[in-house]
Image (tube, rainbow, N blue to C red; front, side, top):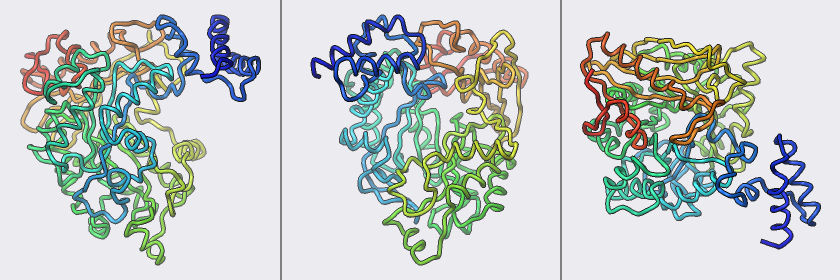
Length: 504
């Protein structure tokens, strides 16, 4: 660092107490750079890192606020470019990254930069987030990379151990030791997600995921048209997806489906399939990612496109289709993503814009379609919330052979928090998710402006236990993230295998 840059940063630090808005901070950074002859403005992250620890809580210094606006900090890690059992004609080959990724997505670039080492990826991301003003104590981890559980068992264990070692701050002797250590670590894994295929889900595989501390499974549904699934060499049919979804929920996992509009389809057919995903009790996922089909070089689908035998949606067409699909999203579902994170320069044909979600939102406004999914309503993305007007409600629905209870606390249209409770087909009751939204509040801290740590979680848990008793349940199971086990222990729960349980 040059002397001039150091002086500019110090100038910003000294003037910071008089700054009261993001705009004033931007003006200060420009002024400091000009004063000391720099060609570019001082970075907010540089100012943040120059401050003493006790002064880093200033919200003006937090960049990319969306990263922790849902109450947790999302951190993605990616496996090495290893083989996948799938033969899907639309997937990029595993060359620079795991199959289905090009190697140029942000998570893939971090993986390559860190030689696909999961511990180094975690440490890299923690440093980035800290420099952006976040305090990543509650971490929602997503393991990206095709069909993780098809990889060699030794690789799976080492990769997951590396994740926990990164958050724990030291290297454990085994994955079991690393998982246990994270229960009280400075950076806790409060949720852990794995991507896989429906035909790679069975009781043995799910138990292995539980050993890792997993809480969510992402399943590639892609299409409900069995003829299309066969044509693209998917290797399974829609019935297999329904079976896998049920098995995951019966183990109390959260389930996210991946849906691919434009996969040898059209608007009418895609909207009809999307509607069925939520009207048919065999599916009804908790979350969904919508990935319009893209044509990527070096894939069999690319060859069909070159021959004129396949035409993907343009961005405008995809936005039109997806906005119509939004009419059918229930309040219990969260739209996790719209569009792949693949750089447009790596796409031969298909959605040519990276802001598809914004295009969908704009189309919904033009059509008068009210978005009611979880992300559209959570307090982290809405205006001021009056917590004194918070009300608790329960939505019951049948799904995957059991009964679901979506217990929520709302203030007007804003969703403060929710709990997913399931009554399984064999009469067990379990909490699959408990979440309070808004800016992340560190463990043990309190904030008047934030929703977290205001006992909303306890209210949701109490209501779930009450409903379980009404349904003649004698015990509550919780599929808890490793870093949340301590919280449930304080609520009277204890470890039973990979779950936290409590007699009712």
